[in-house]
Length: 313
Ligand code: NCD
Image (cartoon, rainbow, N blue to C red; front, side, top):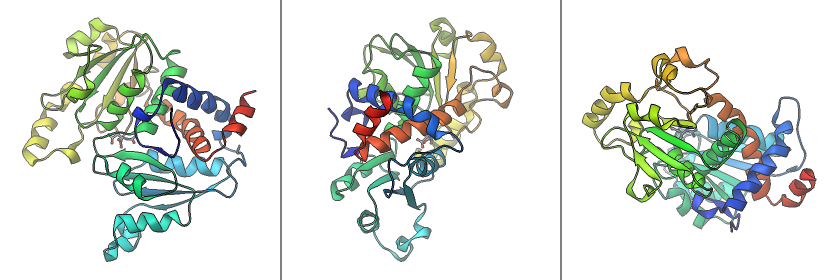
């Protein structure tokens, strides 16, 4: 069972924890809309620290703490702070801890956020640690799957793209494994396969042609994470292959009506603009579901479970 001090990995959560977060997301959704808000987290402060670029994770958390009645401060780049003068990340975080109730941290190195969490007494949310994990993205993806597909078990999910470095994939496959009879397929360039420890008897690598035979409930795409590739040579090699790991009008026409195309974003060409309007293509629906899901995570980690339960009655 999750102790809620930190949210670093999906490994910390049981199925019951995920179900509770999704249940609270459902009752919080009306308050995530424009014009509505709550005062549940009145006076509480979220610090957001992105040592690596972020659009959705960083900004949506800032937006939703406000919707819960709280406030957020942020450091986006070292230039924003005394890190520019050589101060350490650790001292920067120790400083923010004095002003905040909870902190969201993103950094480029696997395991770094867990290390920061050991230093701090306030709860820490992992907003992405290199090619490690991105648990809040997985939870919003689970919310999207529940709402848009209608169930969280008995699913066939194809993961496509950079499965080696895509941290959202790593967290999502772990979350889906908490449920029954889910099967996974991977379509990735050679060298960017799913890490061995995440493969299993429920996982099978595929080629694009086989994807049509699988009749997937969802295709979960991810960009080639070029900033994590070790050499220019590798970057060029994978960029040349990128064409195979895209969806376009031709591929969409061969996919069944029920198949949803998900993407954590940023999309850098993996979804061709001419299929953005296809109702099966739902990355911005995921963004939308990120709001109430992250409201639920924050409210729970800030100790508001009783009020959340009350709202569910
Ligand atoms: C992803 C990330 O940062 O891991 N984006 C996100 O947070 N939604 C995906 C990516 O960078 O490719």
